[in-house]
Each structure stands twice: as structure tokens, then as C-alpha cells.
Image (cartoon, rainbow, N blue to C red; front, side, top):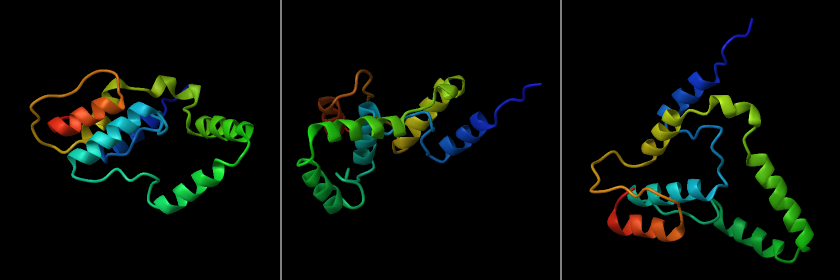
Length: 132
């Protein structure tokens, strides 16, 4: 007898707290665009390099001196480490993802919303217009 997984219930609860579902990867440009727009609408900066920008800058500067093959290998492994397992495909719920996206923005009325492919220009336009 197969029992239902508790993951969807746990994921739904975490999303209600604003936690990103485990099947949405952080390295994706759409996730980064969402984060940048949401932070701006909250009146916060999008800090380059995370919470320790000087360390990130130093590491990137040092990485520029590494052989290209090492950099490619690191990029491949870091992407793999952030990727979702194929086993979670059955757990992906559009409603849960939508609730998480909406939860990122300040709760207020907006005159419009941007829908479409994510890119830097769209993020800047959203910030200029004050829309998600």
C-alpha cells in the first residue's frame, strides 16, 4: 500500500510563511528577477554578493584567475546542486507556486502587473512603474 507524501502539505505551509518551494531553484534568472522586483517594491536593496559582498567580490576576483575548465566544472556542479530532483515532478503545484510568488510582493493594490518573459529590462520597468 502506497501512502501519500507529506511533502505537498509541508511545502504549502512553508509557502504560507514566504519560504520558496524546494522545487523552485534559486539560480534561475526568473527567480532572481522576481526577487529583485519584490525587494524594490518592499523598499529594500538587492545586495550583490549576498550578506557578505566583499567576500563574494574577492572570490569572484580570484576565480577570474582559474582555468576556464575549472570554472565550467564549478558552474556545472553548482547548478546541479541547486537543481530539483525528477522525483519532485509530481509535487509541483501551480497554485502553490503562484501563492509563493504573490507572497513575495508587499500586500497592496497595484495599477498593473507585468506578465511575460523575465529579463533585466522588465525588472527595471517594473521598478519604475512600481508594479510586480
